[in-house]
Image 1: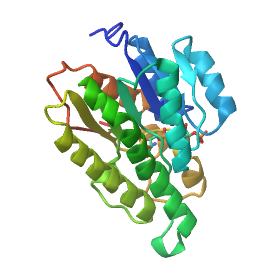
Image 2: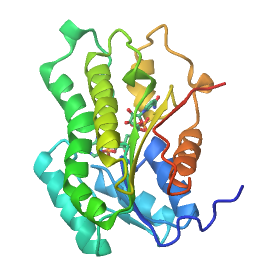
Image 3: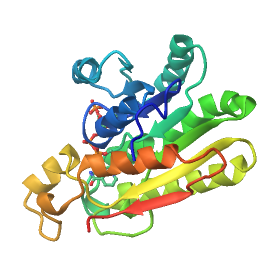
Image 4: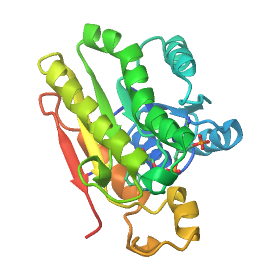
Length: 241
Ligand SMILES: NC(=O)c1ccc[n+]([C@@H]2O[C@H](COP(=O)([O-])OP(=O)(O)OC[C@H]3O[C@@H](n4cnc5c(N)ncnc54)[C@H](OP(=O)(O)O)[C@@H]3O)[C@@H](O)[C@H]2O)c1
């Protein structure tokens, strides 16, 4: 079924969209007619992606590990588009693989900050106006690790379990407001997230050719956000068949 034009007139923000899953989500939302703000730290690659994605894409460089920067980002989005976004896709994330006693406190904290605290701060900044408007959609990119536990995953598992819990609280609070909240949780996806992990030759991880493509996650997100307004997809989990 074609989704071209189904998001015309809507504004989306996608964090972590300079590459990987976020980049694929931004592309599919734009193809469906949305104007999309993309966020990541590296301004150069982000601007390049925005240019490649066309006139309906704009880069908003920001380090989401910094709480003050998230607040500034929210204000910049409202200033640029004249209102809060219709779709907020909290996708930016990172992964440190190490046994708990070998994971640095900085790596643990940074993982929780980017995967969990930043989505909370962005939602907190944008949600009052979304509620007042009586429409909008919060999409959280979770992970297989938001329900399952894997060794060497202390920071990521804690952050993703927390992100799922935050999503479930939001969903409960938003019933009947017109604002929707969805969790999209993929299994392994072939992105740069794995570059360092697999370069270390760790056994037990799936080969990249057996992972989902980023476009599969983007398809899932597009399906979730194009359901009729009275339907909320609470949670969607996908793995490679
Ligand atoms: N790949 C998988 O197997 C997999 C599976 C399940 C769920 N996920 C989740 O999917 C999401 C995207 O992962 P991915 O695989 O696409 O990763 P990726 O290819 O490494 O992309 C991560 C994106 O997040 C941005 N980012 C990282 N730290 C940031 C920060 N402090 N502030 C702003 N942006 C930041 C990166 O850009 P900069 O580095 O320029 O900031 C990049 O655009 C994550 O939440 C991840 O946990 C991934």
